[in-house]
Image (cartoon, rainbow, N blue to C red):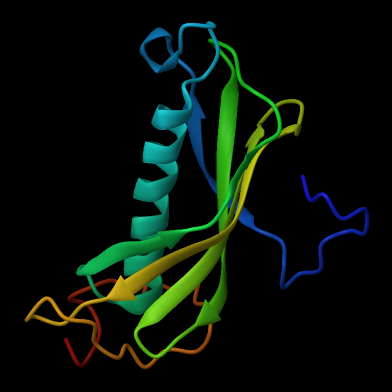
Amino acid sequence: MNADPRPLTDEESVNFRTRKWVRPEDLNANGTLFGGSLLRWIDEEAAIYAILQLGNGRVVTKYISEINFVSSAQQGDLIEMGLRATRFGRTSLTMRAEVRNMITRQSILTIEQIVFVNLGPDGLPAPHGYTTITYDRDRVPGTSPTA
């Protein structure tokens, strides 16, 4: 999990909401989970998370920090991905990601920073106006009173 031996605080922890089943088409030449498949899943999950946090379907990946693969997954393993918003910028959202084996809870990967940028109709960065995480559905694009 976290390289730091102290437990994560509520502000640092992630919420594990998405699960994947490692299937034969997800394997590399070593017979373990292909990193590219895992990164694709994380980017998609992070985009959905950013869309729901920012209330806008027009978000793009801006930056992904160092990716720390600490273990692997085998065919048939169930993995879960977790994300947590760590910072709201004027036009961006930064989050932390962790992937772990769902059964053993062994960490597979951590990413300290994934940054998404909120875009306006013109395709340029646009202020989003949010500063806190939501778990309500009020920010789903097209459902807010201002949409």
